Length: 324
Image 1 (cartoon, rainbow, N blue to C red):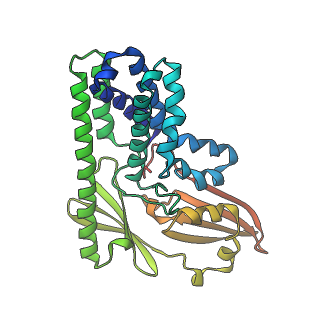
Image 2: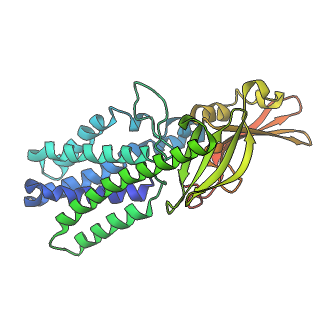
Image 3: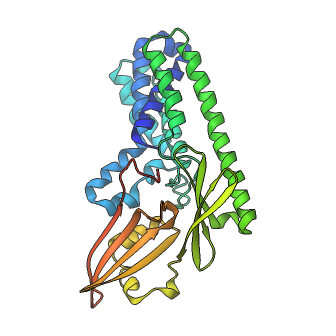
């Protein structure tokens, strides 16, 4: 999810920790748990430092090893022990590490619910896993957790009970989103007589509709599902190896296209003739919106099919859909 949401959830996890009598009774432990939960909730995204090495390195590494299966076990002592020492809570180092561990795990779980996905089963597999049930920013979760933090700040006497209720509702909400996703997926599979593996779906911002992509062999079909109705939007040819033009093949070795292919699995390619060459654009169809596919690798070639430039990027503002 987005950075702001992760930090907010870190704060509410620290509030939830007050249910532990030891945390509630010792101010230094409360401060240590708050710092650990905030840092732990953001720690997996420390891989954003890869942006310094360029967009290709960032796409290859973001939500990779820092979100992997052993990552929480590494982050817990790496952050928890020095935080416990810094706040004079060495006697409760285990508690601080525990809440760091919980914060990291919650971060990874929430990212798994997003369509972008995570490599959370590394080192056993580098496959990108995504449940496609939540947007990058969920307004309902943010509002509920934000209200809980406000009550805590205003010294509400039953703040701990509020945090317990909010996390119970959060678990129920996540389960409900999964159930809704599976029901819509089943309806689309029945409607188009296709397998679930051939369908990918993204929720809209308010969660009242779903945009989908269906692999139909030689092409992709995009559309919306809302209130029991299916609305088809567009048909796009697949980028199949045996149907690529020479210009498209000439871009396969470029760094941007290689990074793109390591991440994307619903791929459309468009070759545009220019006055002095070609513009080849590889797009991830999963993230289409209003006939645009903002996540793409664009490569410029000369007439001899030499690569002049390539660019891999999200061609949208962060507040624009799709929210991944």
